Length: 109
Image 1 (cartoon, rainbow, N blue to C red):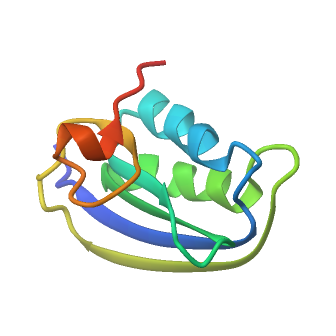
Image 2: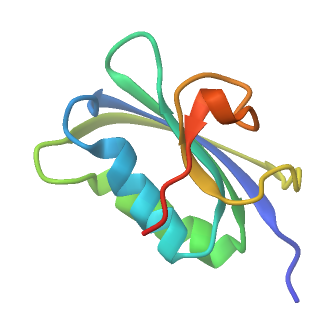
């Protein structure tokens, strides 16, 4: 079994107000990934922290780069790391830390 990897990505452009977080949530959950997605305060950026198999993370990156209808990703930053193992599922985070129930919503698709 391959060791899980960690992905940190920030997509910038028209990525807020176009259901981008829920698009990423559905894709990540369908790929069995763990982590979170959240809007960044600058108003034109979304942060994705995901952990899982590299093949699934690569597939998620393709979806993030494309985005949902109405989105336009203009810039995309990616960093790789070892998986922390600190996430139980994939969710939309509204504030950090994501493990506080009042700071996020767990959606099941």
